[in-house]
Image (tube, rainbow, N blue to C red; front, side, top):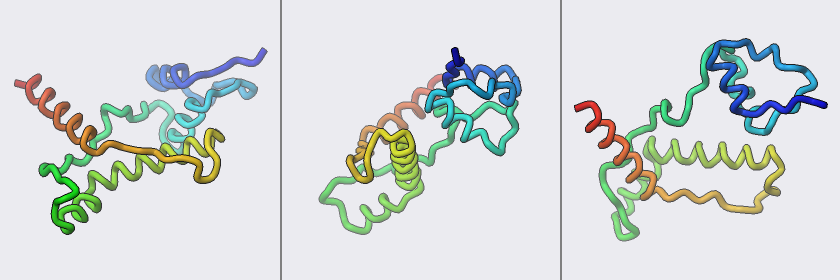
Length: 133
């Protein structure tokens, strides 16, 4: 019977500094493990991959906007580094869904609530500031 290797198994190997080239050639990799190994490609195998918590996000826009905000402010938000980061994340999710054959060509939407995301980022920043003091 073939061995099934999950994302957790691969992350643990990398965390412990083990070489990922020792994985059995006939092992079955979960899609998440395959994505993780693909992301490691070209990097040192002993270096742990960045986790969601260690990735530095661009700061959320300080001003809350609405549909009644001036057009130039809405365009500035849409073209900000923060929104570009969100757009890249949406595209990455779409690519992963497509590569796993979970969706057809344009068979769905990937929504993101920018208001909630900005509130979560601000809350996280406030919590870490309180922890430091």
